[in-house]
Amino acid sequence: ILYKHSDFESHHKYECGYKSTHHQFRSKRGTLTRQKPIRDPWNANDKSRYLELVLVVDNTMYNMLNRDTRQVIVRCKDIANIVHALYEKLNIMIALVGVVVWTQRDEIEIDIDSGKTLNRFLTYRRDKLLKDHPNDNAQLLTGKSFNNDTIGKSYKGVVCTSVGSGGINVDKNGVVGLVAGTVAHEMGHSLGMDHDDTECVCPSGVCVMGRSQSSVNPSGWSSCSEQYLAISFDRGMDYCMRNK
Image (cartoon, rainbow, N blue to C red; front, side):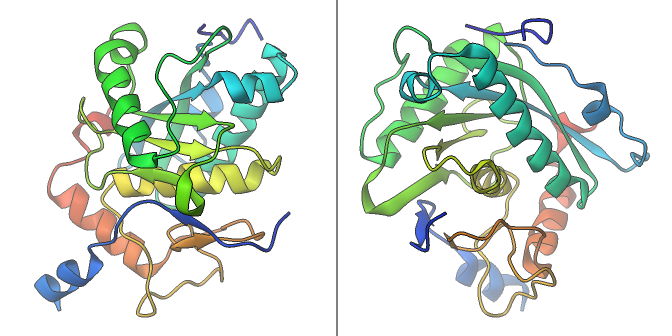
């Protein structure tokens, strides 16, 4: 189901399922929701990028939210607003253009193996979601758990592609800021970012691309993330993000 705008704390360390390649990188260089405040914010400029995002909510999460579609939509808007606030610091404006809720059954098999689930979701995006609801990136929100304490997974440097621009995210702890941080993190991989390491400078203390997540919401980007993003843009990976 697609909904239109008119329709509507743990100390454990959880991991991103993406396998870092930053060592190789360093060796080489030393319901449809249109929200105008997101699409055209006051501080956008001629160098701003615009990423159109669709959130897909699985049946487990729908049931966890009392099968209340309005509650689902509100949560997705809250997540998207936090993600936008994070990316706005990089001059990237996030537009939540769609919320798809699997109210009857999941449209893919959600396996405890995060890799299998990610590949199934990306196939679903390519074969169905893009045709019905065009987007630059899609993120699955699931109420199920993955093995190895994985809370998110995506591929690196695939934004704007039909085959890889998406990710999967666990949403079951109730803290919207932490879920938004996971979504922002997986989108960061799509944009070409790697995990932060000890060489990265993180002015905010807790940065989005940290390898693991605890009970503190990320609030900024590291020097490494900014460098990775600049390289992605130099390579033209942002070609779908230049339109308002």
